[in-house]
Every structure is written in C-alpha cells, then in structure tokens.
Image 1: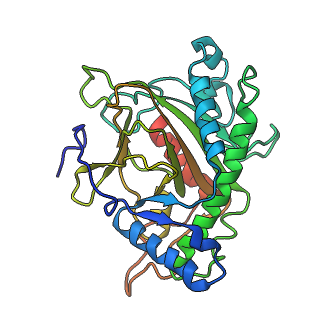
Image 2 (image 1 turned 45 degrees about the vertical axis):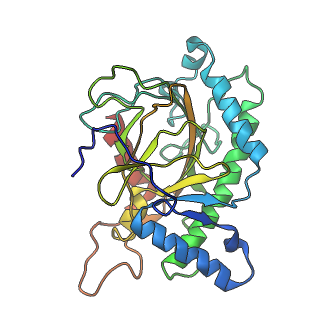
Length: 323
C-alpha cells in the first residue's frame, strides 16, 4: 500500500473521476432522471468522487464567493481574530492557521478558514452547530454573497439527494425528511504555498474523509486536491471550470453499509501561490436517524453500524479532529 504521508500524486483522466451532468434530474422524462441516478451509482460505488456540471448556479455568484473569500483572508490578523470561532457557541467564524489536524500523526493543517452556517438567532434549545454567524462588518458584500451561495448550493444538494435515491432504487422523494431543515456548513479556506522545506507529513490539509452527507467543493484554478485512488495511490482532482467536485461523507457510507464510498482525500498546495477553496457540507436534518438503507444488505448480512442521529454523528466527528 502507498504511504499516505507521501506527497506525490499522479495525473489521471476524467474516466477516473467522472464528470456527471445533473441537468437530467430536472427533466420531465423519468428515464432521463434515472440515467443520472445510474451515473451517480457508478461514481459512488467506484470512487465516491465526481465532478458535477450543468448545476445551474450562476457563474457570477461563484466568482463573487471567491472574491469575497480572498478579500477576507487578506484582512489584517487582528480583524480576523475578532471573529475567531472560539467566540461562537456553534463553531462559526474564523479558524486560524494550523488549528485543525485532520490526519493523525502529522503536523497541523497548513490552512486557515471561516465557518458559516444557516443563520439562526441565539436562543435556548439550539442543536449542535446551529446558531448565529459572525460577520466581518467592514465587508458589506460578504454576508449577502455567502447567504445567496449557501441557498443555491442547498438546492443542488437536495437535487443530488434525489439522484442518490434513484441510484439506490428508492423512491425519488425517499430523502425528503432528511432534507427538511438541513444542517449546512459553508467553509471558506485559504492555503498558503507549501513550504520549501516542510515538516515531515506537513500539507495543506491532511488525508481524511468528510464527516457528513454530501460535500460540494468549489476550487480556484490552483489545483492541490488529491483523492485516494482504487489502487491506494493519490490522484489529482484537477479543477474543471464551471464544476463542483462532489464527494460522499462518512454518513452516506454508514447509511449504505459501505456500498457507497467515503474516500480519503487531502490538499497539497504546490502551486507556488495562495490557494482558495470553498467546500459546502450538506448534512441533513439534525434529528434524522441514519440506519442501513433498504437494499443495502445482502441475504444474511447484518448492518455494520448501529442507528445514529445526524446530530450525534456530527458531535463524534468534531471530537475526533478538534480533540
């Protein structure tokens, strides 16, 4: 098996990370919708990663998100620190450089971030990771841009869940309860250039799988995302303009009894410049109980995981990487 701490990776074609148009999920013809479901099934069982195109999110909004992100991370350190997520009751706000270690036994991740979620007032009874956001007051366009983008990506994630239902032979609306009042997290990330002489195993983001349901990643043109291939080597997920890179989180793997893959990935920023990316994490309704899906057990097979609520699953995952 390839050493996960090695930083080399190989280029691959789009047949290794498939490109899937999701326009057919809006078609009136059930066969067109099912064709997207079939493509998703192949991607989810083989790689757990794919490029999503024809999603309908305006390019102007995508460009604005990246521009606001670059502006925020260029602010003076003291301005960003005023919004530190340690000041939030729900993990919202600024995350300093080297604050998280996603790969056990390696140096902390060489990245800084900013967490945004659904805007909810501070009050009693809020669930894990739910509450008010923190906002940079000197950037008037930041909040409306991020809220508009979060709303647009929520629609795409719900459409993908429809496609996943079709991929599993379920009714198209099977996940409708899971999608009601969903937990979402928008995470702005800035990666400085990889140091010329890094510590052993040091990288922008350590090898990890994502926690929840779906991740929709917006990349700039720098590259750096690497995905664990079927042969246990690392492959580049080269940016494709106009696409999102979509991957499944641990919860989907758990839900399907590991029929669908939650795949290791990491970031090594060797571009020589700053890298910006924006993952959108779609985790679903906090109270929803995830248990093995119909059709994901072979005769005589038992579920590998006990039922768990979305909220309890998230709590366990945060404890794992933030200690």
